[in-house]
Image (cartoon, rainbow, N blue to C red; front, side, top):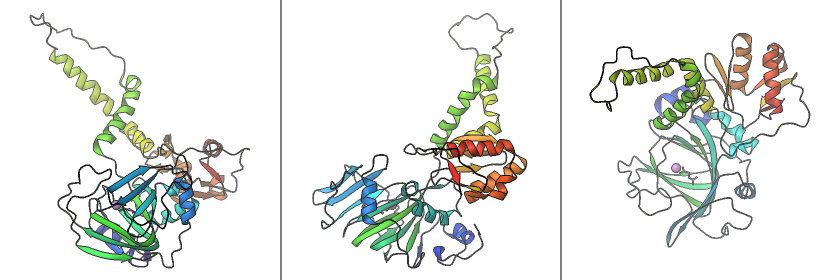
Length: 373
Ligand code: SIN
Ligand code: CO
């Protein structure tokens, strides 16, 4: 991805300028971000996806009795009629289920893959929406079909209405308002309050991001470290040749607390282990993702391409794919990093890989993680 090339997608900014000026900082409205945009997913296809087991979907109705929310799957004809106003259904992770949506997401890879989450697609009838709220993550809201009126503001007061089945701001104050047409896009940083209401039937694609949360990441890494600690830290026993006789036997000796601190420090002092645990965590497929391998052993000699569900990343020493880590160096590192960045390599690049790397690729192909081009 060229980071210095001006993009219509970003209103004529280069990815570098966008990241510097807007990312995590301030909104950006882009008219005609994708000129003549025609969504590759239609209403019927989205309804079908919302009916599938293993696809995360929600139905939100703004009824006279208040907000109502239901989780999918929604069997055929269980959604309200499209002639009924003020309802919307939202399908999460559509990029995992649809090659065209996955391809569109690639345009946003000027942000590291580790931060990309998914494409959520909503479809609303006139007046429909999810109410004024804020999200914890950055989002690009791409208008795909019909019109949506967005009102946005830097609400200081982020308190939520109590007793409502979804996050609705108690005191939403809009500062700006715009109606988006197909192909227009609005970027919002985390916590920026917004309310999008459909003007007639409308479809919106949300390109969403994720950010590890301190506590959750610490738990994940520490759980991984705990699994490794038994072997990694050693089996030396605590020794106390200088222990004096005690009159308070229930008191824990301070040298024993020191020993405890020491063993934990030792377990933490393994930066490579921490890096591989981080990569495994970041590339772990979502719970509803499963892969199907091919019937026959594939021939990869003409090049390979990652499956749209595969997550592949790397750091200085490792390569990570779908929750697994591998130490790589030399020409294998070059070829496999190229596969992670471009999501494909040619037969020429495949040819220069070591036998071990080729065998690993074959394993991953048999698991359905990648396929011949
Ligand atoms: C929607 O598409 O209806 C909601 C998207 C959002 O506000 O984040
Ligand atoms: Co939102």
